[in-house]
Length: 436
Image 1: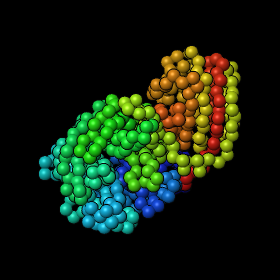
Image 2: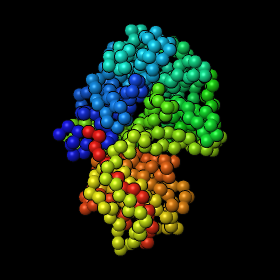
Image 3: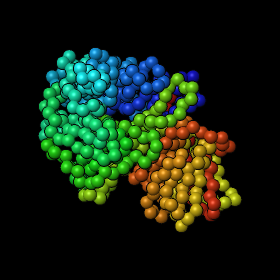
Image 4: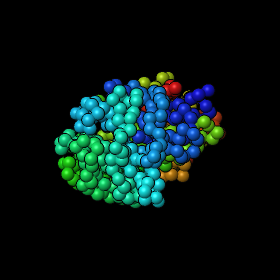
């Protein structure tokens, strides 16, 4: 029954057993996508943090390997990142995989604080060695964790984004990935933990830099190797209740910027595992200057899971006649648009859970959580429905939300109700294959 249990997600990554949280060490190397992750090898609840390890050749079908980093004298293995050292700056060999992580001692014990450490692999992650002179960075503040390291081509140096405390972060730099200099402190309002730092091109072809935090808020700015200058206020990318601690892969082919989140929260009663990752999404920027925002969209590889497909087209939902989508599948990829009305509601029952489109309030509600909509005449929604979650992409990924849920009682997995005449265009209904 492994990977086929009652509440086991069928196209979202879960550990074979026990607790998982943040994705760590996301790196592409020699045709392999690596995903390390926070894992408790001993229990379905948080604790004993160890780096799990899974690999894939398509970002969808994952094979879980032996654990990569175990607790040691410096502490348990908290979150971090990975990169490929193409130029042998660290001295472990050209093409070595460098893994940066927080050794979580006890911040209340001065002689054993949180520190940043280094590990490396010279065989594409098959064997991993901890650097003998760890830690490479001492303690700044009691948070002091989640190192995200990138190579900055323009200044030919490694850059590390590090969480400090409250809403405070810092940037550090290094020529050899071992000796680090702190050179800038940053504030990301309303956000703690799990920084990410990466470039994207805007609509004018200009390189912009994104400084990201755990709750899905981010700043867009410029970076020259010496200073990150924010050029927007804090923007929001994740509007759901469960998307958290997202990170992007390094060293990706074709310059793609691909992100995955931990879906915190969810319920998986009496399962041998606990919690899941989101699906991978590709990031891009829309707009330019200060009028710029991030778009997130399921990776193109996801279409390989689509099997039986229907295109119902334009439909009318009335108060007396609900619209039943002709499928009995539990795994679905559904795209529809709804013609805007001045008031009223459109209900979509997703395996017994109600998603409410409230026209007067101009918002979408799911699980007592609200997502504000824009003013488009016919907003478009894409729903990726798994055994225990739905991920929502609105207007091509301009607004996104990740939600975990358990199904309620239902007769049909996807039904629409309205309080009055409502035009909907059901563009595509794909039943999906399991990745297991």
